[in-house]
Length: 157
Image (cartoon, rainbow, N blue to C red):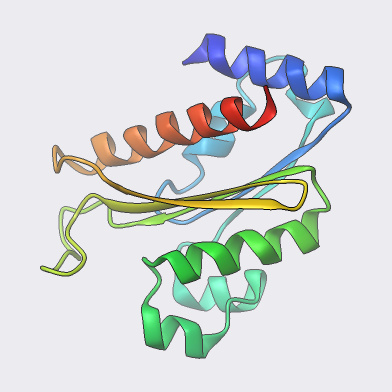
């Protein structure tokens, strides 16, 4: 994954583009990976870890009514996180993650391993739903970061 991150950082530098992240279920792991490469400071603007609903409302301006109707782990919440991050950061690439890493918190409708990843490149927004195998919290977080890295790479190539 380190090689992919180096490619992302170099592509962003060459394009004079920036990236920001809004993370929930990954708890900062995506930002940590993106900043693990020397030179990342030239392209990585910032990351917001909006783990609680209150932080999603306060810092990412996710409407309370949206959270009440759809929940924090939903396409709608992921989109709101992403859209508002893009307004705050003004980065060319923005990415948001929200999901259930477990081991608790899942239900029949929203099982452990359910994750939404949103990516925005300029004005194009894509929200994708994933159901990662429940092999533990760290596995789900790592799988989300890996998939996010792949989405970023595909978005900027």
